[in-house]
Image 1: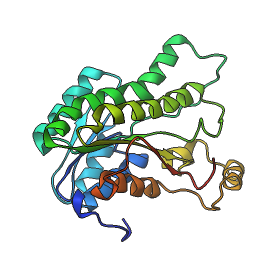
Image 2 (image 1 turned 30 degrees about the vertical axis):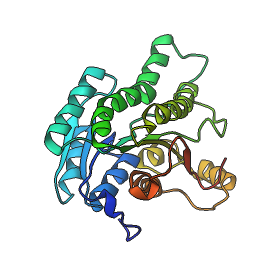
Image 3 (image 1 turned 120 degrees about the vertical axis):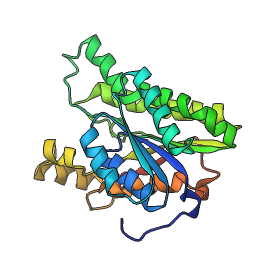
Image 4 (image 1 turned 90 degrees about the vertical axis):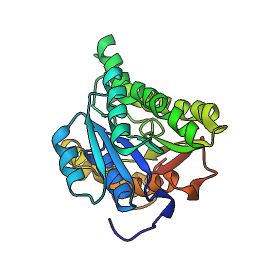
Length: 251
């Protein structure tokens, strides 16, 4: 990463990142590793995650699991805790913004998108919170989306799940705040990950997006990672239950 802020409070902390093997999650994982944290990645894609971690200095670990399987998620978190110690930071990053036609979505497809984009976040919090309570605090960062803020079309199940993330953040901030556990949502705009560029970015769609933004530049994943690092650090000690936007002023 470029030489931006260093947070001494992150050095040596155990950080778990779901979906940390690619996209925004990879930049988040790299950012924590550069801060001297112990990074654990939970991901369905083993090759990318292990290759990423192999390039980091220090102690890091990977647990393979499909986050739609809650038993596997809990086992993966237990495996990482055994290797790296109890999590002091959780980044609920994993999601998949597949496009779908509202008129053709089946009940099973709807449920699957809730599983991919929402359900695992609650159970990840449930898995790490007891150790955070015992330690006297922690930071949980849920990844939202500006898709529903912008009234975006083409992915109603995804947008619904992402809107619900904000409710999850608010209620869990209240549930856990007495234990000095902070829970926040980071809201990315249209981030130029390789997946987005391969599937949906064209000169025309990018031009429309940049015209919508107050700032005229495409948003790289590293900008989201920098916000996550801040919220995980002790510098954000009084930040909880809120949305932190990284969308270049598009809402």
